[in-house]
Length: 263
Image (cartoon, rainbow, N blue to C red; front, side, top):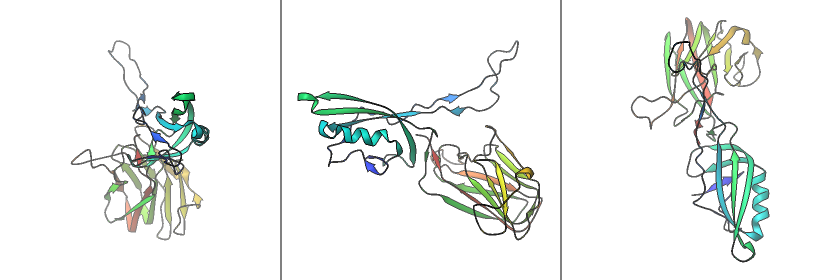
């Protein structure tokens, strides 16, 4: 078991580095909630679900003093942190490091390193694409981004073929619609990271003619997202969308993205 920063192991025998048990790699999770008070009513009304505050994680790494500066230079760069303990990888920013020496002339040092995780999540290393035929007015697309434990807010949804009256709804209630037609020779691509939509006449996930004026979106957090859902066990999580169309002919949908994980 090990932690790596930008592909470099933080338990590297060449430098005598060891991740100590005093580390706190699991971040505290807290929601940033807003509350609306009504006169004469107890408590508060939450107008929307909360969003995660920016978490921090701390690793305590033992190093011989001779290699302390090498370790400090590595961690100060920040970058991508991953672990064999958990799925996914996190983009981290360096916050601070604090050395604590022991032995003669502090020959051994425990370096306490704090990283901030701006995206508040770890992400799956692989982009996956799931496809389904739109053979009915309402089609359930399940098994998306298997194993996720946090909402994915930057997935792309692409529809190919002749459709009208398109509406895509997540299990959380998040949604997007496209009011224009998609012809048999077109692909409609909705990018949830920006809320923008594009039409292309080739099989591509970039570029195209922007048609965002004919698209709209919303949800519990005000954006389209793919949330963890389960039917039998909360340990078996995946995204689930419902794709509705007013009319369709030889049409299909594809969902592309990376799973998101709590850290």
